Image 1 (cartoon, helix red, strand yellow):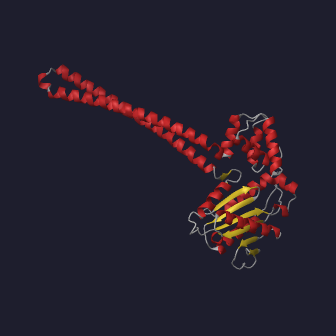
Image 2 (cartoon, rainbow, N blue to C red):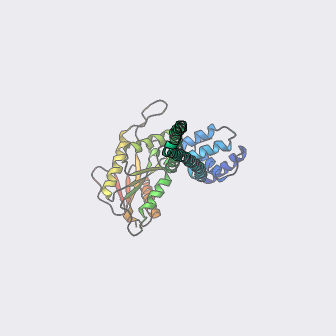
Image 3 (tube, rainbow, N blue to C red):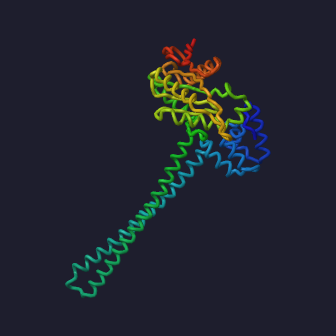
Length: 354
């Protein structure tokens, strides 16, 4: 399998052929998984797909799908969790039934013992002693039963906590890009939709779409050979320096998206400039030899939320501004719409939409 990017039609044909050769059932979730593997956008997925061997089982494919394409398995995860919760609720109701029966028996014995004690003057010492012994045994059994119940309830709590954790992890994975641990496009789209939740009063924020200028230093063949390392290296670099309160995601390849929770354009540009400075100061090294490969730059297109009237318009404006930055030679930021004056020493271009 190659990591070389192909056209959509070419990849689709290869996917169909590969699925037939490997005997993979033509399920939608299988098609998307094989497509992603052959498109080569996720190096970790590619490696694990290859590791499944020539003839891949459905169980192996589904395990890989749950990790990298969780949205395809959402129904099965929810169904499995619902089944587990139903079973635990049935077990808990059974425990409550046992507890109710135990309390009823204990209450009956207490009542009988109380009756014996009230009538003690007309009964022999032996009958009273027998009653007290029965009450003592019942009390001991009650203590033992209570301890067992506590253990069972604690065990069930552990099971329920595990189900809750699994659901939380599954929900989180739907919005994570595995190679970089940044958000993914789904997370970006969700955040953009939230910006315009109130169409009359959009959230004040700035959005940027950026791309590493790998082509300015490396040939296509070199980029292909270094693709895995470039993704993890620059994804990790962004994760380290990007403000935690803002959103950073990876789309595919070396394209990233950012949402800054500020309506101040100058602050957005400052944060992007800070990221670009990091790119220019942290050297890229060959993953095999450790040799210094120099520094790569970053181009970005920016648009403030108040200059677009929908999530689609906002992302399109950023894409348009990024295309303008790359067409100008890269290593620059283009702002969509009226912008602040560029500060001294910063290679910002101001793109005014027509």
